[in-house]
Each structure stands twice: as structure tokens, then as C-alpha cells.
Amino acid sequence: MGDQNNLALGIDIGTTSVKVCIVNTDTNEIIAKHGKDTQANVPSDQGTDGNKQDVPKIISALNTCVAKLNKDLLRQIKKIGVCGQMHGVMLFNHTSEAPAWDRHERDGALIRYDVVQKNVSNLYTWQDSRCDSEFMANLPTAQSHLATYTGYGIATLFWMAKNKPDKLQRYNCASTIQDFAVMMLCNLQKPITSVQLAASWGYFDCKNSSWNLEILETGGFPMNLLPDVVESGQVAGELADNWHTIPKGTPVGVALGDLQCSVLSTIENFKDAVLNISTSAQMTYVVENFEPTNDAPVVRPIEYFPYFDGKYLAVAASLNGGNALATFVKTLQQWCMELGFPVPQAKVWDKLMELAASAETDMVIQPTILGERYMPDLTASATNITIGNIGLGQVFRSMCQGLLHNLHGMMPRDTLIEAEITRIVGNGSGLSRNKVLQQEVLQLYQLPLVFTSGGDAAKGAAMAMK
Image (cartoon, rainbow, N blue to C red; front, side, top):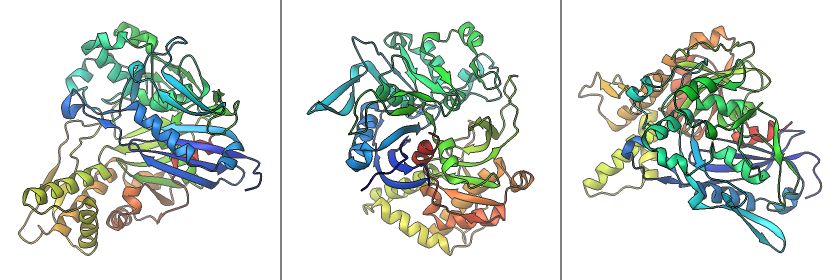
């Protein structure tokens, strides 16, 4: 394959899959990549309010992905960047006598790391809704420009402190899944996190780059579990072993947010807005001169998350994206089963796309079946139903329209025009595969919609390792 000067490995530990890629950081070209669905969801003792994932399965998927890449290229890796799903939290017990992971060698070379199941909790993801409105209302007021919601790491840990204090006693560390991966790769004794991920947990003062220590301690928070925070883009440590032939000593960056890395790899200049529709949906653009406050947070549809180099992302993040459409598809599939006609899910999707492409509808569907962070009790609804608009294609078209209208309500066209945005860059499989959603974007925003070669959070993680 020949020597390449500046190769970086990018890792994205997402909500449903792990993706890795090798990037030439001189040209930002992806040289090789691999992805794998983690299939890591596990039943929660909180029923539908809980959302948990199996950490060993996620780390196993990471090992598998890296192992599939070309060994000659891996030997030339100069740095490793890691990002992943934001807001979530996992607990683990890690000491030199009882580590949270095992090392597996073959012929003197490290092949893989495996998680020691008994020392690690499940990952409580951003989709976890165990912290209801009443619980959240009783938490202490943060000093941060960002509000805290259910599914955010600090809220989940507060819930554990109140409802499962015995469980917390078993662990001495807490972090995001990507922070855990960095700690494992570098053999760190304590997790460290980036400003991006700390802000995504809640109770983080971006103005002074610090946790709300006094507020948390007074509120009875388990303070020993808070990770240390460093600036996004810094090196967390060095690879502790030769890992799948990547040389020992290779610098590993502190873990980052998948949203920020996805934007980094997608935009070509600050006049681009990024629309991502995958599991959830986000519209976002870079703000160069945002000044965070540390007053009490105000709940609003647009939030400002730390980006890179002191800049911020203006983000309208909807909990309803491809997951809301997938819920409808699964319901249709279930109905067919109940009628005695099993239909493969892929077939349902194909037919819906085909029917909706040419459908015209005046039915109005608000498909917010998963609520919204700024309005957790929001439900879905359908209005203006007539005998002439209940065809399957019309209903699906109305759902797609509703998804975009919901996002547009959070970040309208006027907001983008005021920010001098000149085009929308599309991102995420939920948008790239759905022509109906694309038509609705053009209709609502009246701006060009383009798909670039970016959009890959794993690529962005590699690019962030300057």
C-alpha cells in the first residue's frame, strides 16, 4: 500500500453502530472504513422509561471494526480520534487489582480488549426517560447556559443516588462510553472527558469550563464519580499496547461528541447549516461569537453546545427523527403479522417511499411520539383526517411533513437567513435514503440542499486530531 505520512484512525461509538475509518489528515480523504451494528440494547428494569445498552457488546463491535481494517495501514496510524453518542453514562469499577477490562495477546501482540462484565454497569443512553418531569423539577438549579434533561449523565446519576444508592457504591468511575474506550486504550486510572461531553451531561459551566461542584455536592450528588475535564481536541494519553498492529505510544485524543465531529467533517464553511436525520434529528450551524453565561438555564428549542476553538454550535435537536418513522413502520409490520401476513421490514420501507413520493395530502400529523427535551410531555397527533387522505402513501407523506415542520418550528428559515446560512448540507441515513423528507426540506427552508462526502462522525474525530 505504500507509506502515507499522516494517517489517523477515527472512531465513532454511536447509538446503534460503531464506525471506524482511516483518514489522510493532509487531504481529509477516507482511505478505509468499516462499521458494525452493536445490537447492544438490553431490557430495562424501568420498562419503557429506561434505555440501556450492553457495554461488552459495544467494545466487542469496536474491536471487530478495527480488526477488519488493513494491517499495513494500521501500522502507519499516527493518531487516534474518538467520538460517540452524547449525554449517556456508564458506571464501572476500575483498580489496578481489579481492572474493568482484560487484555488479550497473541504472539506477544495485543489483539483486543474485553470488558470485565462484573466490573461494569450497562450504558444508560440519551434515550433514557426514567427522570420524569417531577424528578427533574426537584433537582437543584444549575449554573449553566445549558438546561439538563432526562437521559443526561448528571440527571441519571442523581436518579441513581436517590433510587439505587447501593448500586453506586459498587463503582468508582462514571463516564460516557467513548470516554471509557479512551481510558481503556490508554490504560488510564481515571476517566477524563472533553468540554463537549461534559456540557452534554448537564451542570457544566462553559463560561468557566468547570462542573457546578458546590451545587452538585449540596444536592447530594456522588462527587467521586465526576470525570476530570480537558479542552476538546487535546490528547488524553498514548496507546498502552500495540492494538491490532497500531503502534504502542500512538496519541489518543480525549473523547468528543458525535454531533460536533459530524459537523466538522461535513461543513465546508460557516455559511453551511447541517441537517442530520438518523435516529433523532438535528439542524445546526457554527456560531463564531457566542458568549455563554452561568445564570440559571432557560429551556428553549435552540441550544448552544461547545464546538472547537472556542466556537459554539447552534442546535435544534429533536428527539423525533428516523426513530419516529421506524416506530410507524414497526407498527405496520405488527398489524400485518396480526392479520396473518408477515411482511419484511425492508419491504414496508420500500413501499412507503414509493407510495409517498407521488402522494398529495392535507392531513396534518405531528409525529412527536417521543416528546421533546424542551417539552417532555408532548405527544403525537393527527388532524384534518378525511375519507380522501387516508391512503398509506398520504399518511407516510404527512408523517415526513410533520417531522420537518416540527424541526422547522424549533429552528425556522428566518433564523438561518439571519445567520447568513446559504445552503443546507444533508447528513444521516434517515435523510439520504428518504426522497420525501428531502422534498419537504426544500419546500420549508427554500435553501439548496446538498449532500457532500462528509457527514461521517468517525472522520470528524480523526480530523479533530490536528
